[in-house]
Image (cartoon, rainbow, N blue to C red; front, side, top):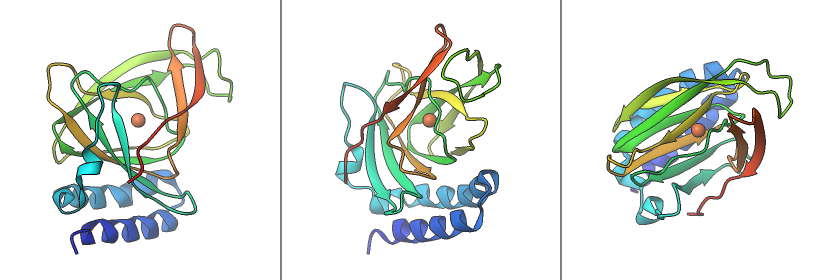
Length: 189
Ligand SMILES: [Fe+2]
């Protein structure tokens, strides 16, 4: 059964996320699982998980829990494709299957009192994640970042596990000092 690594990952990720209600403990428990999963990506990723479009980076759903407690996507980044500045409102664990994924982080300077305005962000550092690398984040305060691949680098493919169905998130306008909630599309398996 070629999908064994995936089935085993989902079962263990579900068990570990349930037993670690603190998001920081949760990503600590899940990051090693992602490290193993990307080693075996070739055994379960199928052509539909590599779908891409010139319109922007593509989110291909691999798994979502029926109770919305977990979701796993394969994201495909063609050269020059980037997310907007966004957060997730959830913990997340990311593993790179192919290429180099770049993450540019933002630091929130103003306190988060739940308002969508008066948000001051400063640019933070960047991280370059090669094939085999794992990164993670936790919410509250939300991890605000831009992810993508510069035009001069080849395609990247990454696996993203979140603690909810990731069908919407906040995007930020640094100049206007605002954020707004948007729906984010994905392809079904
Ligand atoms: Fe993100």
